[in-house]
Image (cartoon, rainbow, N blue to C red; front, side, top):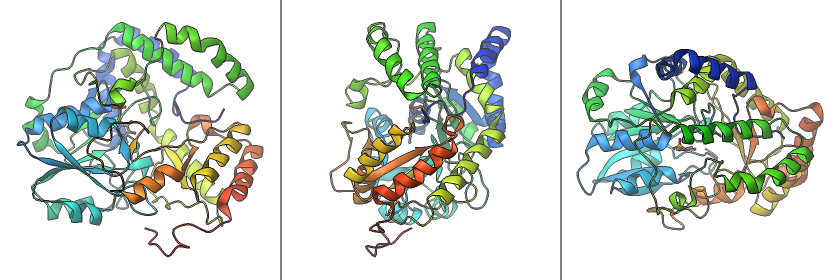
Length: 425
Ligand SMILES: *Cc1c(COP(=O)(O)O)cnc(C)c1O
């Protein structure tokens, strides 16, 4: 199946990571840190590795020591672990809607939403579309702290060529299974500015090494995800059926627990990155140029393949963007679901991220009121993600099938935002 997970991982990376881990031991963490910093063009000191992206966001926000009653602005199209961080820190949040044909709030919308209690703004780069105009916003609101959610945006740049992760006061990255670089579970905090770093570093928490058992589970889950990207659909179905019960029983699948999504439990915000996870990350970080070039080429290919189909709305990626997935807004949910089923039939996994303004559906939706972000809600109802990355390379037959599916499932409609007379960007 062509899909979205472990998008930069090769089998030989896992083997090389074992070798590296054995040879370098705990120093593997420093090796990955340096390689990841190099991939962003920042000093090694600017990067701090964590056991997850949410842990990196939590550590930075806690270090700000915000006064009670402080408010945080969040994108009205985000992942539940982001608002949960602020819920766990006892901070208020408010959501800023995304554009009608974009997946991020514009900096104009953020600027208009900033109120007297606002202290922090989370600026997303959803799917790898880098938010433009952050410099001007920072200049206008010099007392606020801007944190980039760069979980999807490894390697992307804004229109001026500046690297995502270096545009705000701080940024966090995620190395979870479905992110552009995957260590299993993991994350990084980036504070590009040296003065800022010097001020905050003493207030960042000491991290605990995750247990060998937790890392084993993550490595097994990552291996499983890598395997699902290689197998044809019938073999995959059989294998999943065979392994489902025993792997559940042994608790071998590492994922965010339902209780955390519901907001009832907290993750371990003080988890660090294990040396073996770091070694897996290192193998991918070293190949950053090749990985980013592949995603850019695949994005251009989808652009060409879907040209002239106004019913499949999508923002035009800026030249510097490196997309994580290729997102398209379809006319309605039923059409979207039919397209997902049709893609599945030709061996392509069509994602539905984010399926809620606070993804995934069924999350606590901390601080969100239904109807507050209509564009975010519409995106959640109608978005379809086409896969990018190493395991998304399509055959000629699959390319033709994608075009045919788009034509058959709403692509020709032209009933989207433009046709309704709404602004498109
Ligand atoms: C994955 C993700 C995160 C959280 O990263 P973790 O490493 O899973 O904690 C945050 N924001 C967005 C947009 C994400 O997709």
